[in-house]
Length: 154
Image 1 (cartoon, rainbow, N blue to C red):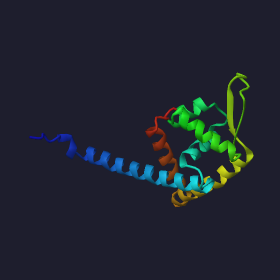
Image 2 (cartoon, helix red, strand yellow):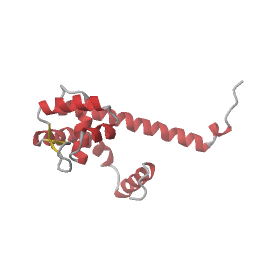
Image 3 (tube, helix red, strand yellow):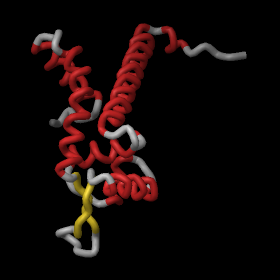
Image 4 (cartoon, one colour):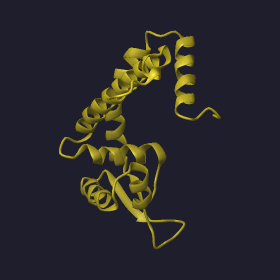
């Protein structure tokens, strides 16, 4: 016989369930937009390649090891995807200035421009939703997301 959890039917539990549904909707919508942006970047590549491109665009030059750790991909997948991106002239590699034995990966100018073009679609979809909000709503939403993401010290 199953025991009913008395917490399950509380108003707080219902609010948490509703929040979970909305977070899932956001993650799903964001994933769909990422896949569309990846296709706009270059439809011949897997969406995972665009994850690497977006990381380099946001955080700048780095090593394949850091890319693998930061994107939660295995090193062999990152290496394979980076090689494809290099062949298409979206990513370049050069000796690391800190350690001449290491390799530093970065976007080429073509890679940067195609990333900007691809991200415009994603930004416009979110902007359409936010454009209807007043400044106070946007500030509150940003503050709540900051707290939720554990960035309340920023």
